[in-house]
Image (cartoon, rainbow, N blue to C red):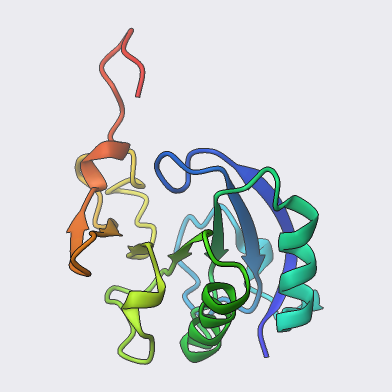
Length: 161
């Protein structure tokens, strides 16, 4: 069972989406320099399908996407929750941030519209750095995934993203 600490409405995690970001606890990755160390401990509320639907329904007029921020300890459960969203909240996009170096073979990638992979490595920077090891993938209409990481790179001084 996954557990979550909190949620937030975010605008930059997944491009062109207003996202209900769900901060999943119990992260086993322990990336050096992690900005979310509070997610390392396995604590918080159980992220059941009922709890997920309640969170979504509270924000359904605002959000276009649900983002799982973590969940690396149980990729199959993230996949099951993504399937629940597809079945019961059609029209919402689904994203997943994983600190793993590869997309888990335990998930059905077609349930996700966005998947970010890669641990945060301070010397390489996050998604906003052209040197990053992290990658953001977006599912295309034909079901394939394209790497859209460069959309996150910092704009030159004076430019907007």
